[in-house]
Amino acid sequence: MKSLKIDKVLVDTTIAHFVNDGFSYLPYYLMVLIREGYKLTFFQNSMILMVYYLGGAVISPLMGRYIDNVRKKGFMMGIGLVLFSLSFILLAIPYPKNLDIYGFMGGMFIISVFSTIYHPIGSMILNKKYRENAGTALGINGIGGGIGRAIFPGIFLVINESFKDFSISLIVLTLVMAFLGLYVALDLRKEEFFVEQQKKNTLFKFSLPITILLIATILRTMAISGGSAMLPSYMNITLGFNSTLVGIIIVLAYSSAIFGQPFLGYLSDKYSRTLILVLTSALYGVLIIILMFLNNVFTVSIVFILSYFIGLSNFPLLMALVGKVSKDSDLAENSAIIFGLGGGLGGALGTLIIGFIGQIINTHISFITMGIISILSAIIILFIPLNKK
Image 1 (tube, rainbow, N blue to C red):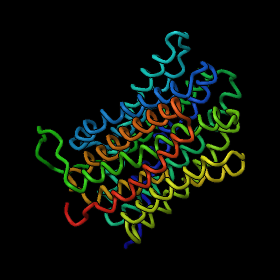
Image 2 (image 1 turned 90 degrees about the vertical axis):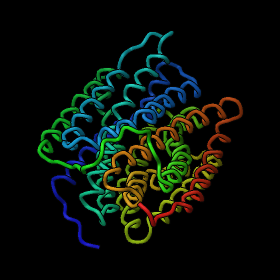
Image 3 (image 1 turned 180 degrees about the horizontal axis):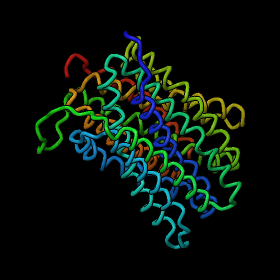
């Protein structure tokens, strides 16, 4: 395995990942604050987040196909970040009480549309440019995403402490990050990442490896994305942790992924992409089940942080495996199918099932169900054939 050179493309895609994932995961914490302000139920909370995932699932395959035919992918990635950042202003609107849930659901859907731009582009660029070091490159790139996830809740808390106003604080954050997205667009405006291909007018056709990986991804992200979305609310509502404590725990948990993504990406290159994906899926399921039998702040925090260290490895592990089973001409489209459609549909189903079971039985059973589903996804991953592209 050749050494990896850190260049402008890797740096800029890492900055882009920082902004993208910072905003992608911020709704989970924002919903804790919105729930407190609007007195939403656990199920209403899950419905709003379900729309967020569902919108991404619907749009991602179409976005991936469009991106495959774009030459200036780096420029498009930056402009996409500008739009994604600014779309969060929709959550800053003080909706009337009788329209609040509909306003937030509509806002989340629009946010989800712009959330589909970064990952297929980032995956395609890094897989194509770095080839055999793709897992390591994606892992380094994942550091940016990990830092974004870790510090965005903290940044928002600091801004909110200064302005003492949820709406103004969110608008300030979106404007600052929109400028970062604009920097990426301008810095990569001359770079081209393009593979000549015939125009695709047909419906999406999934190869056997992509089909199996898609099924496994839906199940895996039902547990991981659904769990990541709803666990902050579980700590706030069920365990009674206040929003500040939840924010601190989330920052620590997301920080763990800063080290987890490059470490697991490196292991996937050195040993086996399939093996590491299987182990992380199974271990996440076990950790979530264990978490449901804990209520002490210290033990809950430790297991919660470990689950994020393992679970938030989706990007380097899934995208490196996509690169292994895809043709260059299909990289962006397949990346969007797996990360967007699979991740979005899995996240939507996960939040819906957690909210529904939590409403009719209890939240502990809903998360235990997700743990079992995560373990099931690990078994399915073992059946992905890797010898054909």
